[in-house]
Image (cartoon, rainbow, N blue to C red; front, side, top):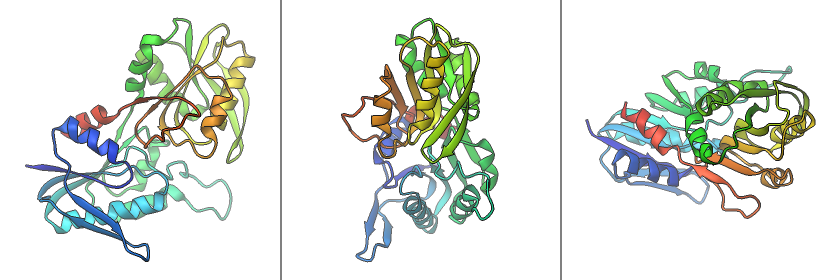
Length: 297
């Protein structure tokens, strides 16, 4: 059965890289906006067979969700037999529970919206809360970029390093990353005071005299990394931390915030487009090989 790769507007660079890994040419798809803002999708290729739509659901999430649904609808009407959404970053995955009366359950709402599209499966990378899979009506393939990040930092990593999870939610990712590198792990117990305010309440594990390598599934404002860096420093960690993340959201002044910490490096995957900024240099690790392996089955 033939396969076609379609790129949404969210991350064409990743779609190009994935097409090369799969040995496919990108299918032609016109994405235009009418004067009133409505999105118009028109295919310019044969999609009969299997279709992969590359569309990370980052900012603006609503526009990218609607565009994904429109592309999927166009593919199905054009004869696609199976459609898989390749969304390495899944917006609203952190809104998996209600913490106060009157709140919406964002992950479930997203699952219903995406689930209304004629999709057969969805592929994600290091989902913030794996249980969010239950919000979707079709199979979800969950991948991890932990090994790819570990392999990228291994050549320059000091022997006296320790892998640090900046909160308890990142422990699973940190453990896999540490196992790949053969390093010990530690964790920071944090409390969130607001959207961009975090307080570290303690460190679990031994970091004294060790170089910290902080890894999290995503960095949005940088507040969690900042709190973790200060916490491990207070517990005797040696020198500036190396920071790794799968999803580099970097909202607002996040990069400047990380830069002020004097970190020794920032390693991120290309699950989301990375702006070319001089504020803070980043090493970008491609997840195209990871995605291609999963799509090849």
